[in-house]
Length: 385
Image (cartoon, rainbow, N blue to C red; front, side, top):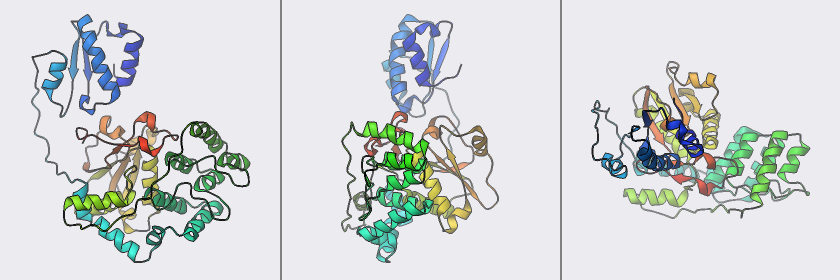
């Protein structure tokens, strides 16, 4: 019988009769230290006394076996020899920032007078133009552009048009863009703001967007019980980029750490495309919303990179037909890129992956709901990497 740790734990809580007739229980990936596994190990520590014939086998890639042995009062530990692993090179954030020259490129873009550079100064006129275009045209590109500005801390998620008062959430509700509404909510958008007495929920009803209306109604009830979160606008200060510590300080000062930096990930994909051997790339994102946003960002890009990549998404709700495509080789002259949630770390393996780009951020399944404030996103532990 195969099942998840959560299902097994719930079954044990209801009754331990399921253990009768079992001779062995195998728990994989115990080094992940998720809450279900930790509690399940605690339960088995007690149940093994009641079921002395039951054998518990714990599988871990890098957890100290003596720690587990001491916890279960076992002195005898069986070590299984394994084949030597393939050498893996690790590049950390400071290494990537140096290799890609990401900070320098962003500074050059800002100094060249492009929209991204101007928007970091926060002129209301440009924000108004973006909100206006989102409201009237509903272009995916403009919505993605606004989300990028919000994630970079240049624009508030609740920015209201200086004349009309329209917000990103209202524009999304107007066009029935369910995914965009979810992303805005995950960033802490305020659903109580009004235009002529109408909230985003009212607008969704007015324009016959039932799915969006139901979502906003549920979110509004949750939001009313919480204190609204303000998005801090972080301004970078001049830093000498000589040492790795200085590079990290400069990056942390300019960019929010509550969300994956999609621009940096795209830059890393460019770097991998130029220097890595042929093969697939697996990109680990903290949640489904970031997976969708990065996919749309790559597809909407005007750079040559998008023509060199075949982009797939991997998450818990992926249809079987799309799931099978993940294992197919990429077309000639293209590289397969899989944008995935943490499901790729525990449940699925790909034999053609030559590079893994890990955002380093993680959001629990119960926190990966549209009502969650961005503060619920957290850094992964070293043992997971």
